[in-house]
Length: 282
Image (cartoon, rainbow, N blue to C red; front, side, top):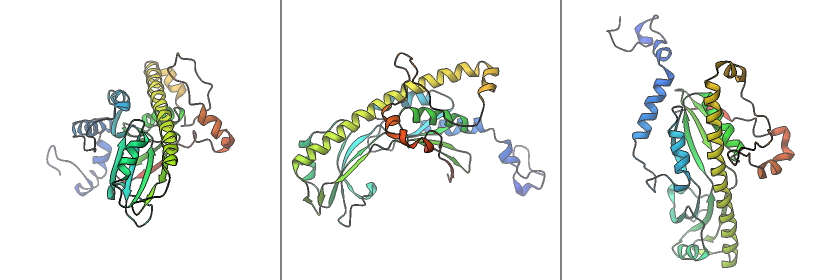
């Protein structure tokens, strides 16, 4: 028999088999994970949360069911990779330029002078990873992300029970500019690319703002639902998305319209229905 206060596992005999996993309170365990995450130092290159997502990260972390684990508001990058092709791995290359704001051609041209390999210009939209207390919480957040224009978002459920939501979009940009240190395009073309990248940056900012407003709306709605058990039970069903007409809520939450037009031809494969749930080791 195990000593008082000790953990029981399969080695403690049939009576104890499986007790450890079953006896763990998921909410309490998530609370411990969240406390550990929020007490960690920021190990990113910048060392702090990007300005455009500070309020969003603060809102998520203020709710007991969410904790953010990593984020990038979106950025323009100029990377100098190796000379063995254009498959650039960010951890094995030189970062010539990083900007979370619109870029100008002169900055890129100055940075390109330091390139010795294959320089690539990239725009990366918002990436946000959020650990959720339970699957239902992740599903609410996933719905908000999809409605805000982040159509490449998905949920993973780990073997230890960690439920993660990745908020991602598809409007990125990646173009090679030089090879073995030699510029392969004109300055005029670089200026054209930056115009596109800056437009994508602006669209990305709009989606972040929309995500924040939609999240506020969803959390307020959830609070009201939780205070009325009958309403909550009525709304409890399988996780599916239905196309809704835009709500007039004084700018609070209006589903992204441009993506609806682009993807309207694929109604049979509506990305809103696919929650992208799959197991992952943690």
